[in-house]
Length: 293
Image (cartoon, rainbow, N blue to C red; front, side, top):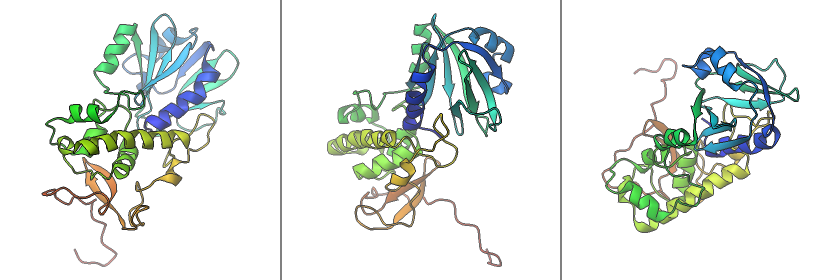
């Protein structure tokens, strides 16, 4: 799933080419994309409006269409916005035909991506207040903030980081990378870190996200830049998806366990397992042909 660096990469590349452009036509190919608003009604509201700016909150892209009309898009698992791509692109769900003859195409193989209309600045603020927590790169995230947000929480720190209502924009990739950088085990209770660990983790979150941004995001499956290029952060992962490889810090073998229902990568030597935590491994491999169960 595209996380904050991937979505921000898209925003940074699209905002200069979309800002000030009028939407001549909106073709909603998949009615599910803008549900519950009917495709014809959604097109009727958006067509003729100008994209004044493109913003982001967490993993959401926000098209400011003027007169306090906002189109909020979430890429979910496999969504992408492609600018200038040909009409033969696969998995198209919506197409914005722009005044300059270019097209912005929303592609999404798994069809989980969504688009919602919100009217009014207050309604926009309320929309995100109900869904998102602190923006990690906006200057408000530090050890003190993390300690305050996790006070009394017994859930794992990995699960806490994946909760968008706590810290917006972090998903599986950047949670693993940040926890490794901070030398915090993903099973450690969120409310049981030391003050020094909260400080380290806050800095590590920002460091991992910034590294992802600098690399143009990570392309593991479907993520693409608007021009179709891949991100490259997957080539810089320290532990994520590197099970069985040596830890870049100590040489110990990187392992994979399951935390909060997600495959989780860590170094068991650098990230000390908390006392009493059960060892939660990934699902067992399927037996080899002929092997008895």
